[in-house]
Image (cartoon, rainbow, N blue to C red):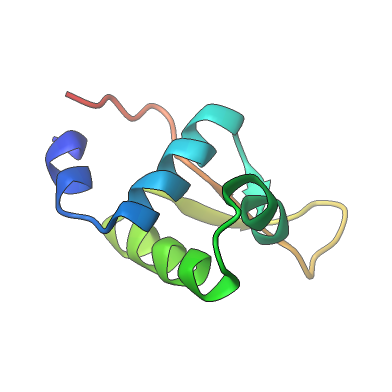
Length: 78
């Protein structure tokens, strides 16, 4: 089910999803470092992933200004 959704997404969204799936919850600035994508591209990818329900956003417990993005579990890709 999710694999079908991922096939329809832009490469940047797939890459951001892959990074979050492999590394776990990350703030946006860390996603930028890990992917080496431009800020605008990461923002667009996160927007798409959030709308599709493939990624969730939550507040950082230590710093309420930060948003943490993560792949909700369990997601089973077929």
